[in-house]
Image (tube, rainbow, N blue to C red):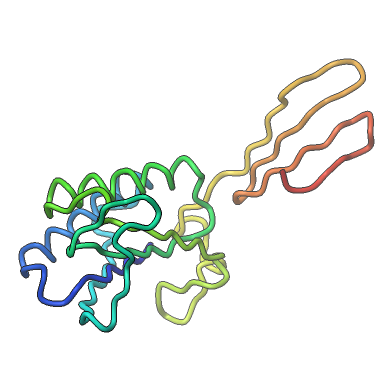
Length: 174
């Protein structure tokens, strides 16, 4: 259940453009992270000129008066590739559907541990059964095998480690 929060300048976007922005964010999330299309939790907040400060050119960009900041909070199980795709699609759909310029869309992704999330009913995501919460499957893959050394890559809930059989275990996050 990712949650988007778009911070936009006050009285710059029409009601239809705000709805189009919400649709763009939802579609980007669905396509990039594989979330159900009805997994739609989006907040759009308008800010007066003295409440929203977005530098028009930092770093080497050309932002218009329609510049926005978008944050998205999601579980910490997402891969870098999924995050790249989300950034790409969020920008593309905001450009295509709302008429923003690529430089106008600033996206900040905030991964949160499942122990810090609740869909409701006072239950943490981490306490829900695997049937009710889609989680990455633990994958163990042998990358190289020789008579003296075996490299293992274990991906479980986004943690990657490397161990060697000969050294007795050089372990830890990569």
